[in-house]
Length: 188
Ligand SMILES: [Ca+2]
Image: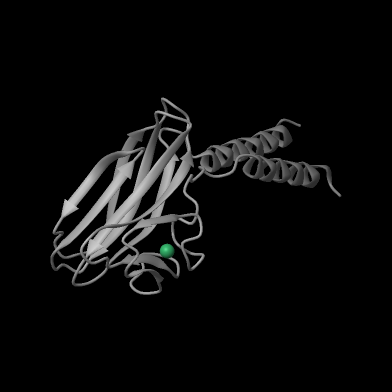
């Protein structure tokens, strides 16, 4: 093998090693897209009626969560491992066909951060919040009531805010290594 060919291969291998060593931003939510086809990772409480994981409508993948609880709220929640004092970006998608009475709640660490009563009619809509963690475990809860119909939730994610996308950073490092290898060849 020619010398500069082996250098290229080495640089490529180094770049790949960087990408593998620094995984993408960690999503703290288990089964946030409901792609297990069930509520794996989520705990259910409250009104147990009309709660299911469905294949339509969905925002992405194959499944979304659907709830049409009548008369009172049904809740899905999970405990996230968080760092006290660190802020997190909560992101999710919701769609509602309209009709009343209806209610949708988001509860972060016991504090209600969103409480919509008699929601209007809207297609898949993204909601993004920045929230502070005050303990090593933060509960994330969604509450639903939709008497005449069903609303759907999909693509729930929680990520530490302000952490650079390490895959992108690693890619830049990899490109730098490739450039360095090319420079070394020129200088010979
Ligand atoms: Ca999904």
